Image (tube, rainbow, N blue to C red; front, side, top):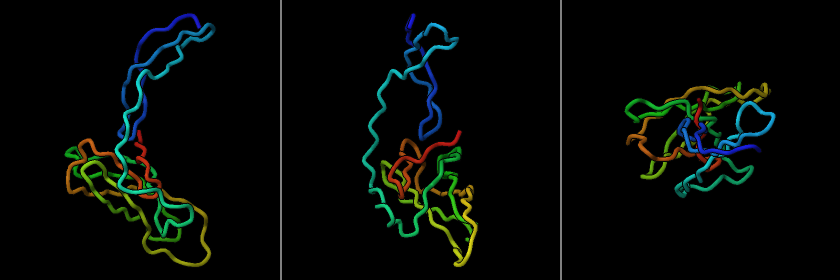
Length: 149
């Protein structure tokens, strides 16, 4: 290491990309500096749900990612998954003051032989209140839904 200075880097959050302070380390033999984020992530609010125990999802499917929000914050577009032998995903919402919990299922599931495909599809979710600074959680994992660039 031949030097260090304070600069910036871009990181991905569950609400999109953010520019944050970073330490930029100059390393001998490298053209670009090694970047280390210089802030501690803020603590997420306590989710109003717990993670579903392994094997007991009861028909819940995970939300793949958040694809966008409406300009007024009153709806979200998410990428939900489903199989090749059903009619597609359905995404429902539970809203609190601190969070939005999304829970996905599929409709029209057919029994019998089926290919083992996992299909992603955009689903629009209407909110009672604008998103504002609430965290978006996946009911299956009890974790923030990742944001798609």
